[in-house]
Image (cartoon, rainbow, N blue to C red; front, top):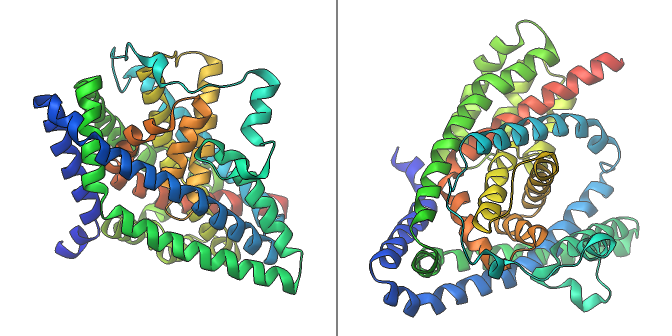
Length: 401
């Protein structure tokens, strides 16, 4: 138990910092405004590190996929399973927000001040995917163009032979340095987020705290529904009678591993073993599960839907209707994929959400806290959903044989 708790010491410290900040913001607003610069400095450093992290991680990931000839074969085989899980997680999460909105009736009267300037129509699409000049790529306001550019650069390096290998070494070294730098900065996260949150509560009010509590309750319920109803149903439809019993018989050890280590990546070998014991083809298990561990992130999609609804409600935007629903789920899926593709990329996904919603990047700090408090159930969903993806792919291959 003590060893397991050590894996969550960073999460516990951040929650403690947020609670302390919320207390200061609620009881001593003037003191909260005084410590605001500390929170701003932390967020600015965090955003500064996110940009090179995206560049190095995405470039390296696409180089490796192309070099291993995975861009076409493995991605196409698993895309169907990913879409199924993404849509199930996203739709269920969105429906839950219709039943219980995370912020209730709370909406910020100054919501318009939180919105960034944005274009419309075709100009909005062009601006979302590209920039007019190279230096503009390296900005927290242009993460999606940077992702597109980095992916193309990584593929180009893979096609360049020996010279491309040198570029990949640059990507790899840069990625490692940024990861270490991010780990160093995150040591200050409890203080930085605590100061930021103190000012946020002083300005916006205690309605945010009630919203966070609702989110934790909603997300725990969603986790139980996904793990015990939705995922077993997908496995049953994919692999037939008896598959659900095998699923529950073999999935428990890697699930406990993910829970104890706070990482679905650490549970990956156990998930591969569980899939093979379920009768899933060995080659499918060994190719799909590692890819799903990095890119699929069903738990992240579930949580990101709630984050998007949270921000939209905070800014007074409507979340009800077919078009808002499609936008919310689409943004959540894109954010989850990006955060999975980028090492330690949670803040990248949150920053991308703000960008796509046209909200000031500083608001990412508010939903970072959501990711912290729901980290444990999200990890459970992310871990189990990799085996579900392998089950879907294996049944699909069997049908085509």
